[in-house]
Image (cartoon, rainbow over all chains, first blue to last red; front, side):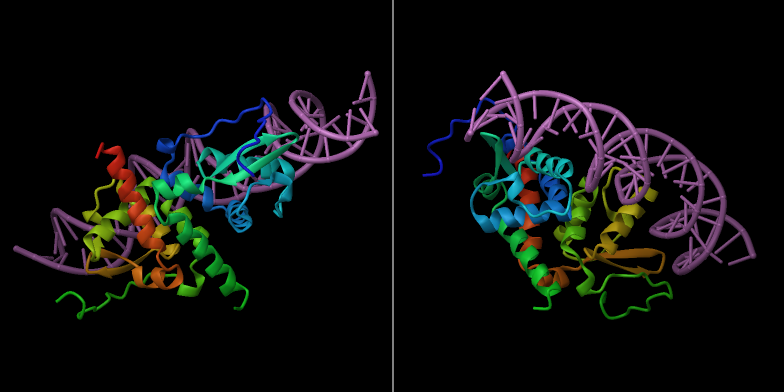
Length: 119
Length: 119
DNA sequence: CGAGTCGTACGATAGGCATCGTAGTACGGC
DNA sequence: GCCGTACTACGATGCCTATCGTACGACTCG
C-alpha cells in the first residue's frame, strides 16, 4: 500500500489549502518549461517520485526552486521520507477545483511534444 | 454586416502561425490577472471587441502591452478597423492545437470567480 | 484643414524570477 | 560517532516584465 505507512519524518512543508489555490498561480507555475516537464513526468509516473529521479536540465538548487514554486502554487504535494523528498501531483484537489483542466493541459503538452518530434 | 467588409486599413500586425504557438507561451499569457480577464470578457462576448471596450484596471499604454502579449502568444487575433483595433479569440486555432484546453481554462476561471464571489 | 478619438512607441522604474555556486542541515548506514 | 547522500538556504547576477507618463501617428467627422 502507498498511503498507510507515512512516518512523515518530523519535517513538514507548507502547502496552500484547496481554497487558496489560484488559477493564475497554477498557470504561471506551468508556464515554465522545466516545471511543465516535471509535472508531465509526475503524471506519467502516476505515483510520487523523489526530486532526484527527475530528468531536468538544471542544477540541484534551481530544481529545488522549481519544486517549491510547484508546491506553493498548489500543483504538487511534497513530503519528506528519510533523506528523500517525495513529490506527488495534487490531482484530486486540482480536479475538484478546476474540473478537466489538468487533463487538458497534460494532453496539450503531449500533443505539442508529439508534433515537435515529427509525429 | 460585420464579417464581410474588411478593408483592412493598410496597417497589419504580426501574428504567430498555428505551428508557432507554444503551450508555455499561452499559459504564461494567461497567468496574468489582467490578461486572463481580457480573455474571459472576449469569450463571454463571443465576438471581436475593440481595445477600449474592455474593463481593465490599468492605463492605456499598459493595456496595449497586454494585448500585444496575447497576440504574440497566439491567444488573440488583432485587426485594425478604422481607428479601432478589433480583438478576437483564436478559438479555432487553439481548439485545433490544444483540444478542450481553452474551454477548461475558461470554465476554471469562471469557477474560481464564482467561488470568490461567495456563490 | 482642424479637432478629437483610438491606439502606439519609447523611456524609465521597480519588482520578480530563473539560474548558479557554495555552504550547510537532516537523515540513514556502517 | 562518522561519512555519504539528499536536499536547502542564502547571496549574486542578469534578464524579463508590469506599470506608468508623455509624445506621437492614424483615422473620422465637421
